Length: 284
Image (tube, rainbow, N blue to C red; front, side, top):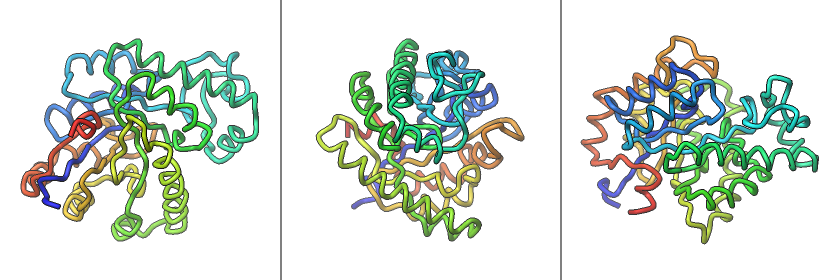
């Protein structure tokens, strides 16, 4: 494979969660190497995010499905088994995922909420580039089975399947090794399961997706090492950029800097990597 054959999506999660994240997405796309963003449709700054996206159609925007640790679209009285009185999903993905698996009532509410999030995205009028999920809960088998037909219905071009290189992440940061190994095993199994269900589907998945092992710590140095080691034809690298020193969704001081880095842009050019989006991957 020639390096010129490599296509890389550089994406931002949580678009619409806050004004600081929206500002970072705008700057990273217009001044840096960001190619796409995933919209949290019930986020506090979602309307602002949509307005910004309409002004910069070169930014590919997808749905950042929230089914854990975030705001729902439907009111709390319609989701009594899923959200609290403020309309927020619990933060514990294990307990909530178990509820999705065993509770018929929870699954019924979840199906209506997933449909509502797709419908709200469609109401923006933005083309639906791709679908992914907050904390990757979209890869939970129950959630995945619900979103897949809706992604097709609403014309999504791609879907994120987290498939990361564990050893690269451990090389840069040896903290929490057992947690990282468990992530690698769990998401490795889920990604293979999801890939089988995408066969014959119009949706495309990148061959590798990076960002899990260094979430909130996507520094320039790490991104440069990652870009030097890439050999797969298609990859997505996702970030959590913000202009705020501290962000409610987690610390991410280096993410915006990495996306604006002249060294990162220079290396992309030196390796002849093509910056891509999910629609571009599909059209290749």
